[in-house]
Length: 251
Length: 164
Image (spheres, each protein chain N blue to C red):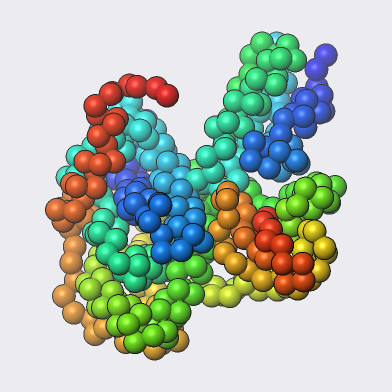
């Protein structure tokens, strides 16, 4: 049976991981050291795997005959519901790591909350994903400390990354109004309730990394309703070209 | 008449493509098997890691193995609940892993720390010289399920099954 509210909520959850996963896969073959190349490629695989599970379920709830591949490869940027933070370019290694850390803490909190969902399928996917997210955030958190408390150059780059990405973190905690019935039914989690914990967790790691927590200021938004930066279109062009050039191809 | 135990015995012959010393039953990927009155079999599997690229190969191998044993109708369904954990890998399989050169997983820790920054507990012993003096080189290895370690005693790099 079609449930468009649930479909929309699942698209937000799945698209975050798909877009960030694809972004992260761009590091494959370009990592600064072999171990990091492998680490980032593994993380990308996990994120895309999580997206695969969520979007498969999203397609089933929509009831329009779209499977996970149709949702990934045949939606345009305006139909994507990921947070802007996930689609920004990788930048240098510092930006990549800081983004993984800022998003990763949110991701752990969100999966943990969703693992208590009254929706069995979503709770199952979340209980599985939170284990992976904890692994990812440990990797990113260790690197944030290493970079921030490292050399003058690594400190500067890490702080620049924190300052540049900070304005994109607010969107993660804006609870979409069209999900209120789902939250009331215990199906999805109210992300606004995760903000205080996120803030304290992030601050404690940044302090250990000798990095400064930016003052809260203007926050970017729009991704949750399909208003994206120009970067998403370029990302999708690369991600979707093969599927769109050869629709239905099997290999 | 084929029963559940028979199906599990057959599936115990199906090896994980990336860790060929373990069967998909030992790995804990096969959660259940139901034999219907008409002889068709439904196997329930759970993925190890969300992004594990071997899952589809494993599902096909399960289907092929049962078809070879004369099961005409095989269905493989996926469940996420309960989430896969390395704690399901039995002691006998852990010994096989170590003999193969992969350090078996420790107990999956239930850390209260929300954003864990350090691994809790001791690392694995070296599967080659059995020394406990080992150091983590990378939390990520050649497959999603393994991490990269190095032995300080015999200097041998080795992979260890991550405990999750």
